[in-house]
Image 1 (cartoon, rainbow, N blue to C red):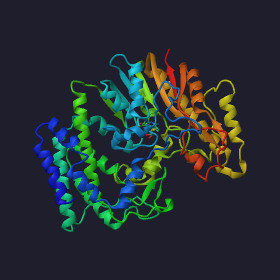
Image 2: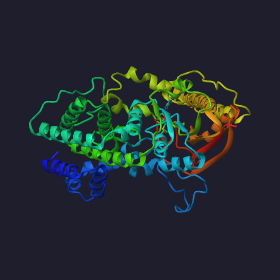
Image 3: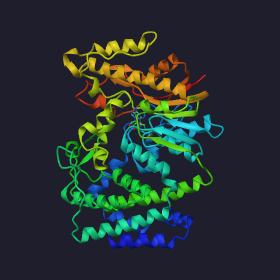
Image 4: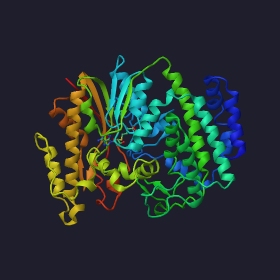
Length: 504
Ligand SMILES: C[S@@+](CC[C@H](N)C(=O)[O-])C[C@H]1O[C@@H](n2cnc3c(N)ncnc32)[C@H](O)[C@@H]1O
């Protein structure tokens, strides 16, 4: 970090006498500040474009169906659940997440379904869109998240308003000084590349690696737990930007996507910038939370292992989006985060994440002879779709229909487990809103929304409605990947739905 940047930032902090003044000074002057100008000037062109790419990561970007008017209401009573609007919203903007949904969607749901203070549950919390929105609205929130990096993001956001912005500022200033001195003085970092982290080509270039290791030395020395987590998250949420990998939407080498490698990058400045964004948002959240004292719990475990610790009939609203039936591999796509943040040190450490993931992964079940539905699917259509799928392309062996039918069966078994748990936890007349996308496997359209609704009915929940706020989505890895399947037929459309359930 250049001396100019540190000095400008120090001035901003010192001139701010109260959190309000700090807010004005940082947020008010943010866009035009010397600091921001200097920072952006230090970013090479290539690096700037890679930042943009990463910030727009969303598995399913909205696509306007041919002939549709982009400005027309979607005919649904819900706002579009796509994550993209979160990237400008305080707190939500900290971490991009795969197939996350928008905070506006959750706000809508809360306003409609909670007249008084209540408990909101998200069993598949991701980076915490539901929980943060619930807490900001003054409700109690409880969530489960199996991926340790997503759980870090979720927990850190939820706790952040309890951290004094000044304390975080002081740490940012110390970081700026330490980093710029280390760069200048030929400091040798003590941190090392995580030993078990193997990649096909160098994850970081040598100059970037040195900078990253300097950053990690600083983070390790931060004693305050809350501040330590914020620094970890600032590194985790930016670490792909300066690597030789990118999301396309799965994580792969930049070179394989036709992008040039990142030779050097202002790593410290980027992390410092992320932390300053956090200070702004914490000040904002503290104001919003004034006088509210919600109880908040994030359990960093599989919902299926841990939900039974909760009491029956205690949840007022569920707003959630489980993984879709598209085999998006949350663990592989967060592998750098899991290793570099110290959650995993060898492949076997993350095995349980694959096995306990909602619906498992195709890779974990494709070789099995036959996975059966472990509940009664009622009249034909779920079983029929699975049989149709099972019979496709047997000549492809484990890549053929049987492997995909095993994956779909494991997925619907988890839909069954989830809806049973939801029924147990919800209070009478309470609602669950489940955002889910349909799938096309081996050319067979699987209407996961209708199947989930049917399964929910079979466990005794009422299906109030299936809303379809978004008619088409793209980026389904199953359709795009040549490993998997020939292109889906044009006649099938991908959509996302909100399945509205109620406990009678
Ligand atoms: C579609 S994402 C949810 C995104 C979230 N709505 C948001 O806006 O951040 C699904 C999440 O479920 C998590 N997950 C998968 N299986 C789980 C399990 N058994 N228990 C808890 N979380 C799980 C995944 O790690 C992933 O973060």
